[in-house]
Length: 317
Image (cartoon, rainbow, N blue to C red):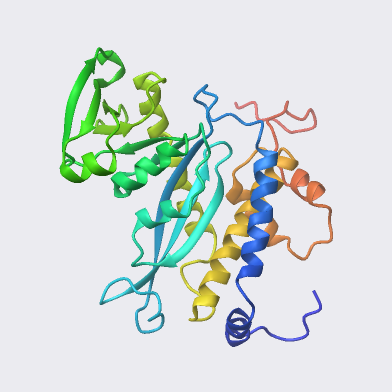
């Protein structure tokens, strides 16, 4: 790589301070376009035509004395990685990095909602005015309801309790703010998750899909949690080379770019294996002058084969 001396932490901190993080953001957006194109033929596993997106955020804790610009609480700082993820292929399509004090619902103001698509939210995104904005775009949402959300039931529909469904109702918000900000009807579905045995209640403006499909759509939200977990476990976004906002944004966007490049590589070469294994293989062989496909194929796990006839055997006594 042409390196003639040691690279110190100070060198990296200086580079992260003076090189604009938007360069890596632009690279990330280019990789997002490529990754979505490669995963276009994948299925979301739900047998529905609508495009499904999960929206959530993940916090990265920081030291308040070293990162005072990332305001969160009095005792610590943090940044948030707000993410909109396409469930087909687990590709993040839109990411916004903010200080930890920025509430999750503010991210909804930045999203360009696609007509006919379905967006999944946790209850932290429950905001009447913003939900109505999604509906005005012709998009659908599935959001978990809060226990103190005031609603009135206008119609009840039969459900199959054997599928874990408790209720399927047509409702309206009954609070003053709810009536003002979202006057249209909604659908409330209550469901017991068979894995956790936890009762979940959803609100949605999607009336054309069966109730059990709506519940399955929300259950697929776990994919975005796996994305956050993978990024934090496999890439360096917990300790930073530099304390400036530019340094933090640079390092997070580089991590996102690495995830996208590995996802593209996995799809292009049709590699059977986890992304973490591919990343480990590339990091170990970073200085090897080999075509990527040859490197990955040579390191593919060997399948069980017939025993070698030259192998000595033990017959016992």
